[in-house]
Length: 242
Image 1 (cartoon, rainbow, N blue to C red):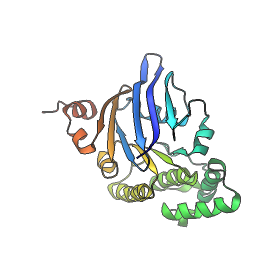
Image 2: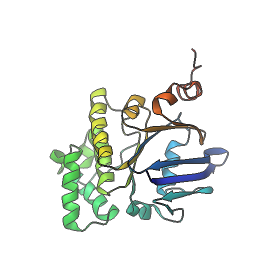
Image 3: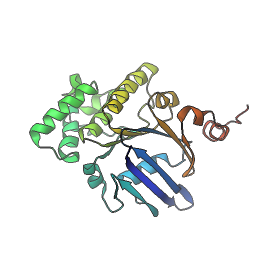
């Protein structure tokens, strides 16, 4: 399959802290890629580099075969790179529908009629259609996370970046969210998912990358990687044979 995104030798540091250290990886069209690593490993910073929220010190990012280093965050969104945030950040004073409409109209550039149609479809898909007229700041945590997902989908992504979307949910809520993400994957959208809830991640992703201090230390079959001694020691924080 064709690569939809490729990062080549990304480097980014904040003072003495490296969040990307010669980091290279790719994701193919229709693939779901998981990323794990301990706190401070550089996972969210990697998303910020991909979306253009921060700029790398070295290296390049290609999307659909085009170098996008010079593009702003809005321009990258227009091209199809869309994300959710670890901490939901809706427009609290707007309704659920209005939040998604902003994404459809300004993220995807749809006209009013098409934006309305898209928002209704996405709200149905994410289980929020009954909440469409509620203010976003009145939603539960699960509903806010679903709204993060809905807003990203309304921007019509080719590549969807999910940042710890299962964090803080109950087991039943997590199962419900996994089902929604699985349906998104089946639609053909490429997904990069950062997650600490490993069983949720492993139920979806085709491939897993482990990073630590901005370096890639493993890339491949998710189950094999999770059995790796090095990964267990770094990610779980225990001796592998303990």
